[in-house]
Image (cartoon, rainbow, N blue to C red; front, side, top):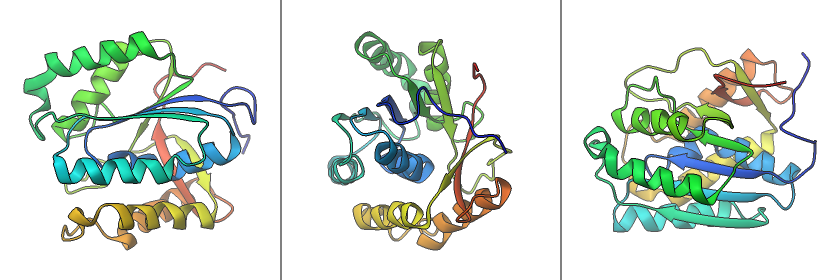
Length: 216
């Protein structure tokens, strides 16, 4: 299968990473972020989480610090919008998106899917497309109870080491989620293996995205 690249291979990227909750980016795109930073030294990352509390904000910042250690420049923002109520806070969240638009021109935006059945994820996915209209937008997936994974069509193969590192960081930095039935290392590995099968990844692991619009 012919591979595609974002910009020039090896050139630094400006990445905007958007997550509704404190572990969403790590779950949906953590391996891709680790791979990009390893392959694109000097990249700039803007990391924005929209819902948190005091405990989870600390987890999010510690996780981002370690996951983004390979970046050239980073800026981490953790907001406190009320979880599960994003559609009712859309105006205030939209204001944050407008501030982002005025302060960054990303090469790639990693965000939620507008088709995601979780209302918080869906709201951010819709606002991403409303705000960043001429950018490469990759919508990551979050495995969860609703069963809305869909059929992604863009795959990022991961090495065994990168897949393992992603899972290690998730388990390490989000102890507040350890009691949740879905927050299991084997679940995170399972989706990586499934997407690895679908794209014939050399090491058997991959993350998958929906890319509604790409220009070659």
